[in-house]
Image (cartoon, rainbow, N blue to C red; front, side, top):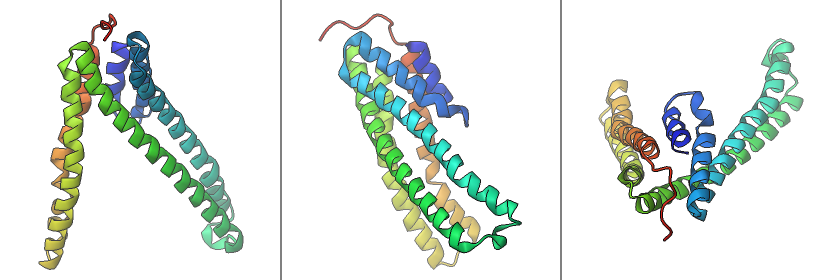
Length: 207
């Protein structure tokens, strides 16, 4: 449990490989819930695994829908040689399916975030492991920073455009405020990994 959870959080920082992170982390949370007899941990694990499966289905459907359209277009000699009356409905239908699946993934992601956040604080209290609470508070701070960054980006971008600033200043206004958010997010994941690696294997006393 501790190894699977720790590795799961660590690989969430690695591009491409991080696609399987929700599966590993979800399994770890579910195992924790089974050992501690806590429905909250089990629900966190189940929704994480469901998110992994939904993401895999999303990628599969995306490939199944868009790749044949692109293949047909290029086989016909490019988009200019494809009949718009057949291509446009296909693209619109594909976009609707794409948006629908994206909404489902967004809802699942929100549910997972809330369950994972609450589970961190509950695990910290249950196991007496402060790394869980530290990771949880960093997640709270990251949420606050998201709204702060959005406000700063809009404000600084507006001022830069009003002052007819160059593209370099506009890019700085947009991306520099995101640096602290990225650092906090990185530390939150690392603290979660440390929390699992330092977790006691024995189930906590009943509460």
